Figure 1 (tube, rainbow, N blue to C red):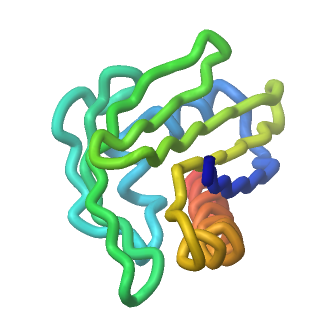
Figure 2: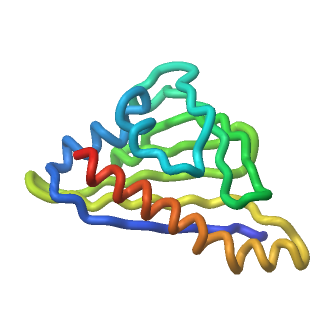
Amino acid sequence: MNQVQALAERTIAAPVDRVRAAVADYRETRPRILTQHYSEYEVRSGGVGAGTVVHWRFQATSKRVRDCLLEVSELTSGALVEADRNSTLVTTWTVDGNATTSTVRIATTWEGANGVGGFFERLFAPAGLKRVHDELLANLAAAL
């Protein structure tokens, strides 16, 4: 098994309910916080939380572009799960906190390649994706 995982976390000075609502808002908030790595963003159905289907192209490097069609579901804990219909890519957004601060965690996993290419993917991809996630979280904090 060649599972690759990238994690990022940030504490935001905003109430947990407000942050959860922003994370679940694929029509207004999410497009505003995207980095330059994302293009062709489009909500295909829904738009708020579970049941949303959203498309984007993600360019991790100058040579690597991923066409993503994500279906959003919600765990009983309230975490949002974005599962790509085109690959094994799964991103989970978890928001915990209280009336004044929130901690947002983004965890992305996927099945990496085998062989030498897979070795380098497992070595370098998590750090690169963490940088993108850190930028997303900074943009989220600024939007709130």
